[in-house]
Image (tube, rainbow, N blue to C red):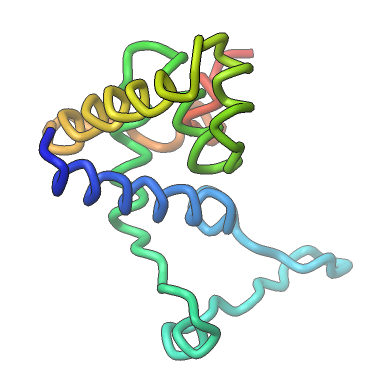
Amino acid sequence: MTAAELEAMDARAVNWGRWSRAGCGLQRMTCASAEGRYVAPRPDDERVTAAGREPLDVDGAERFERAVCTLPGQFERKFLVMVYVVGRPRAEVARRFRLASTDMVEAFRRRALGAVSERMGSPDEVRLIRRGRPLWAGNTGRG
């Protein structure tokens, strides 16, 4: 992967992390009303840009999610979730994954983003719902 491709994939991963934290992907945002039917309005692009944030690319985030779900090992999926969704610092990620140094975190990030990049173009995409349960990078659907 070139530096430009890595930067583009990093931007997609950051967008995926924001999408995952926002909860607008696999679940409806509801208020705690008595009936549970109230759906909160989604922020429009004008309000989001006025607040100084970049609007979410939902389609891109869903494509990234599908690619992450097709990764063969859970190690890469958990790594990407910890770095981009949870947002842990490099030192903590290195300690949790028993990596020797924070430089190995960067090397593994490149490898994981490269694997996701290869799968983003594949035609056989995984559905996000399996047996009525949400399927995301940290949930294998078993159990």
